[in-house]
Image (cartoon, one colour):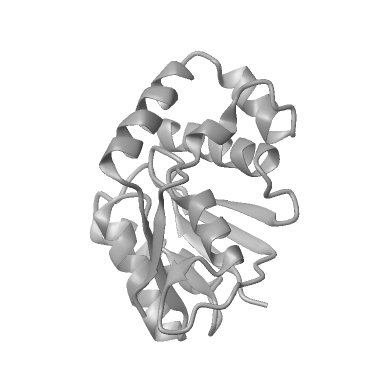
Length: 181
């Protein structure tokens, strides 16, 4: 059964959308059957803004229909990709979890994270996908994210399945997932 490995930046955008689009077979590829994914690995830095994005990812999965999947948090001991060593650390973290046939979504995070994810996916025989969120949806979701500042305890409660805020509003219904290779 394939895993989904994702890179995470300072917003949760795209991760749940990719999971849902793959699960429904709603993605662009030559052959696009529904994909049963039971594990999602979120590979990220330890930057405080990224820590909050991770908590939001957990809340969205817990509150919006992703309870059947195991979500693994893979925080690295770096705050950003600031050097070649940071890039190699990120690349190794992805490589250690990849198997042929897995899906890698490089939508989130810095460009260097995307490059590391794409290189390792290609070398492992994994499939590379990205999810596009239309600009007007991105603006809408960014405004919602800004309204959540100062509500970290409610976000953490969401990650435990206590859906006190409307986390599902953070999910774009207009997203498109594309398999690149």
